[in-house]
Amino acid sequence: MAKVADTVGRQMFFLNKRLAAVLFFAGLISLGQAATAELSRNVQYRGGLQNARIQFEQEKTGRVAFIGGSITQMNGYRPMVSEWLQQRFPDTKFEFINAGIASTCSHTGAFRLDDHVLSRGRIDLLFAEFAVNDDQDARHTRRGCIIGMEGIIRQVKNKQPLCDIVVTHFVNPAMLKQIQGGKTPLSIEAHEDVLKHYRVSSLYLAREVADRIQAGSLTWAKFGGTHPKPAGNAVARELIAALLGHAWASPLPENAGKGAQLLPIKPIDPASFFNGRFLSPGLAKRSDGWKWHVPDWKNIPGSFRSTFAGMKLLCTDLPGSEVTIEFEGHAIGAYVLAGPDAGVLEISIDGDDYKRVNLYHQYSRGLHYPRTVMFATDLKPGKHTAQIRVALPKRSTTGNRTARILQFTVN
Image (cartoon, rainbow, N blue to C red):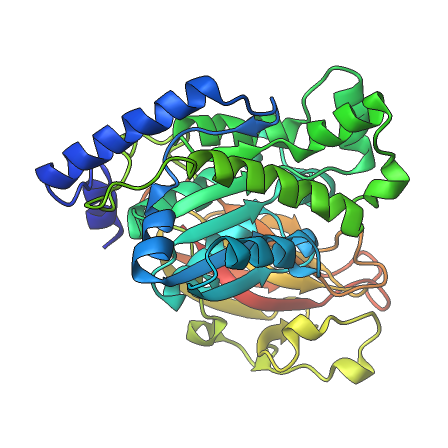
């Protein structure tokens, strides 16, 4: 199915030639508006965004999703933007989806996108933010940032080509310092390469904050830090409102119809997670040392987030005990909760030598931290078998030896 979806994705997806002509004419109007209206340099309008507007204005219904980390999950910019949309379209019945999960990066986003967003039905408008978590949590390389963000964008455009997308680049202290020094943070630069490739509009909120601080109209304290205060989230809402207001400035033609943008035939990186998906641990063959159950979190040291309450995890604390999972694709990993007792996994794929992957994260010391770890990303496409076990710690009696797997991640 993935091959079929990607093949279809290479076509223009216009509903018919008549609608294509209408959209082209509407695009000329939009371009004319862009020539006369000046946007902030931190608002990057790359066309489109008319499908959501057509749905909201003509059909009077809308499904809007937000995906990201804690900045999305918290009571921050997301409800502010939702309120703005409801005020802009007072007669429209909206459904808003909060698909934010604290600490998660764009890799996790690509793998959970279908389960947490696209499976909910037609998505008219998707907001995403992963610049901060790709930077401070995952600490991805440039390639890591690209394969995650491209995994999200291309997957949306393959599976729901009429969905409009907006990406906002938030900021942490280290990223702000780079911008103030004339540099672009790696995660933002990599994400922007993806967004330019797919003509997706974006908001450079991080630089907007730097600009306002330099102008004396904002302070980092007033903005609120990595997890913005209301004043900081209001800046994000302001930029998004400017973008959408600009895109929707001209009246819609009476016969305007939806249409999809041309999808680039080639991805930036063929290994990007645009076929990313979860694979249930319940499908794995496990030895007696593994259990697929709901852990007794009250009796396990470390903080636990209610987001994962009641969920089954594939767990072991017995070094050497193996679990086997069969999958099809060219990449395999795991979405885990890595707490104070998180150990090291050893993975053998198709009988090759075992490779070690450390589950423990810098934030695992006091928290069962959600993260995606990849075992392999450049396998030959096809069917594979992975054997997984926990390594014996160097301190055999007291060392970390636990694994708790929420989902296997396959691309």
